[in-house]
Image (cartoon, rainbow, N blue to C red; front, side, top):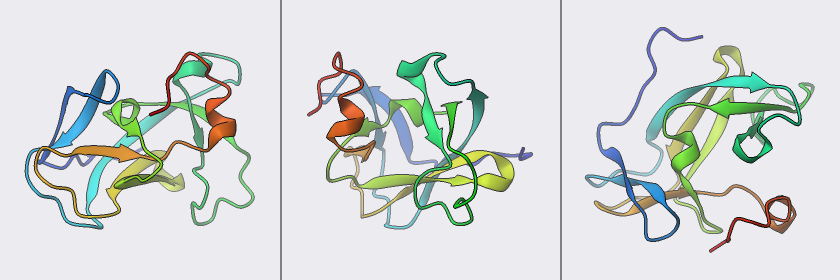
Length: 132
């Protein structure tokens, strides 16, 4: 657990034309910037399956031998909408059990910040969600 969690001063939650709410830039944000660090609550498999993230995130350094588990992230984590061409991503900081969201490309003022949640096999588990 960290003492202080970072949130970028130029992001906010708004109504999204994509799906319900979304996270938007209030000013231009450069590639490679951290958007926010969010703690998460580990949960047993099968509990609240519509609201969980899996951790550690694929590609997390040092996670090769850590079993995949489920978590409910805090902060804005559950509000970032999906995109097949994301402008942001996240990774797991294993030591602090934190998801770190960061930009992949330049994000312009008023642009929605979107991440990639997974391919068609992921979305097939949630038929009630419309993928855009």
